[in-house]
Image (tube, rainbow, N blue to C red; front, top):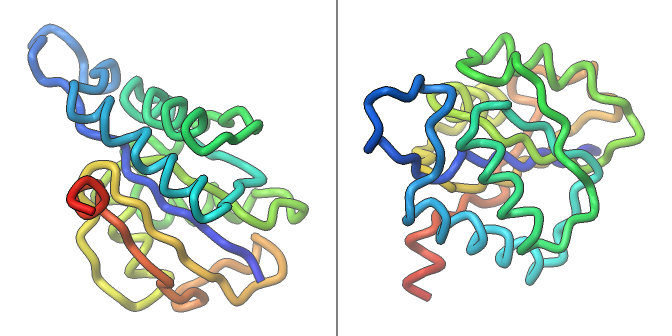
Length: 164
């Protein structure tokens, strides 16, 4: 059994039209939402053995803020393939994870994350910025990851936590 946490990057800043999409940082709302998700993980004692992250600026900032708030000691592993990835590309990245990693946090982008969630669980769900989903996977090794191998345990959005 493996656990996959899917985290969409927090809200990015569109104020500078000269920045490439890859370089866009988080805006103020994103800088508040990311630690909120990290605190949620800390309160539930969720620990990631591996953090896989898109190297886009907003994803890296999200991973860093979440990690600090969650109390993770693991540094993110950046993989360029996650940026603008479709479902087959994300499955490729996940299938290469070392099997010692039981719980993996994947920090990425839509529409790839929503597509991956539906592919793995058969459930379509909206993942706004900074949304976090936990998927239980009925696999022993990461190279066994496949369609409908998972179950969506929960999906939480920053607005739900801020309201509570």
